[in-house]
Image (cartoon, rainbow, N blue to C red):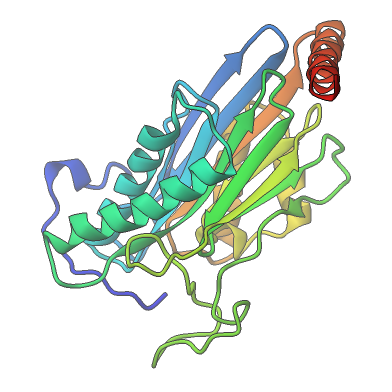
Length: 295
């Protein structure tokens, strides 16, 4: 990554809270009558910087919206970009009807506002890459995913022997068939939030079945861990947050020195018969609406 943001003296908020490689872990559970969502996240500072420039959702928001952002550059503005990006996306989407246009608009607005916020402090560029997922409907079986740059999203099967499935394709210069800037690499992110480079954010629809997981991670994780290892570790023993910590430790053991963050959402129906009843009710309601339209 070749966008260099300016270094500023660390504020009390930015002082390192843990040594390099020591992960902070969080876990939470969200339930309704039909579905149980288990969420966990782990994040660790790399060896290149004094603070962790990744940021992720707090897991306790009012809506099933989850974000991982990776500040690009290596200075104080990178940390600001990732934190502000996560905050702005939650302000835009929490407690509101979420669809693909709403997510695209939230990302485009964040691109402008993060850029303006940074420009008030420095004339240098600052930006972040991002991955987002948002559950829809009472069963939370349909999800919208969105990304800009090289944060990734995977789906992990309920079966332990299946490798994770990559749901995103990095917005790199190579993938977009664009020439990188002088000194840059074909594998650097060509799209980031905060520098005006986002025109059409990537948004897709995916299904999440019983026992499956969505995994959001920064490149400090996915550059060092393959899909099969991702599935194996997340199906390991112990709390999901501990499994997330093991992923970061594995990335470190394989040479990662970048900030590293992983956030996992696992879906489990609470009562199979109630989930079936809810599905039947939704289908019946759709049929009634269709009949009214035709009559």
